[in-house]
Image (cartoon, rainbow, N blue to C red; front, side, top):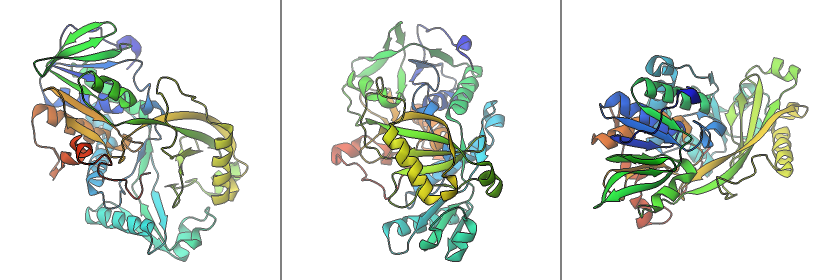
Length: 406
């Protein structure tokens, strides 16, 4: 879908979706597919212009004992595999097992083992390696023999955020959704405790229901209806490397996707025989409208040095590109999927650096929430209370931080 395909702002719509990233476009697509309501998607910039376009787009299922995420990720991954058939758009997709290195008797070891059990109980492909088998499986890793176990999420993969958002938008448009770009929403309008429409920089739109999936800009709209959405935008930094030719010939898979225990960075292969290395620190709060989109030189050097310590043969890798992205982070790094505030106002946000893989599930679940249906994915029930804003009223820490969240 191109900017030339964008619709003009309608006077009214049954449901308005705010945000043209992977979540907003997925929600619009599923609303159009699963109901006969008129739907309008509004995006302040271009589609995938925010966090989605900078996403590393990892598709994994290992979440330790947080099985709600495993169920959502697996359902979503099956949807991604058939994206062309389901949506009518092709997306970039590459298989890349995700490995958890760990030592027995540590929180990391427990996390790895819990994830193994969650995957194996669902017949999701998963392997566990021990001792010398770790070295044999991951010969590029210095120190691989120092770990007790390595749990491999064998069917993990990665995709491209822009591809998916544009694909969902195209599929939504073909199902009758008005996709409006370049129009910022400034206020959710209400009357007598009910949603009546939106105010935008280009005029007003009447609607009965609104879904706000605006990433780091969500709290600003939430304030217009007196809802507190605890999201902190944080900046993460990414470097794309070009491995030496002999390395790529020796290790065709380049590297598994992984983050080492206690690490605040991760790596995965990249399209075109590249390697992506990035921070995962949740530390640098930024204004999503004004932040440095180029990595700091110190951080770039740190990332490259960390990688060289783990994979010495990448010491001579060249730099293909650099950029930064923004996570919309909740206190517990769990999502917000909820109806809160005035009647007809829904929120899908706070995806905290691990949301991309769940986009199809989020789209389906939010569509069901708007339509008043029970939250299910196939034959699996999803407890949306886990994602309720009420959890922060009970405890500002919400569900508490996970042991791992790459």
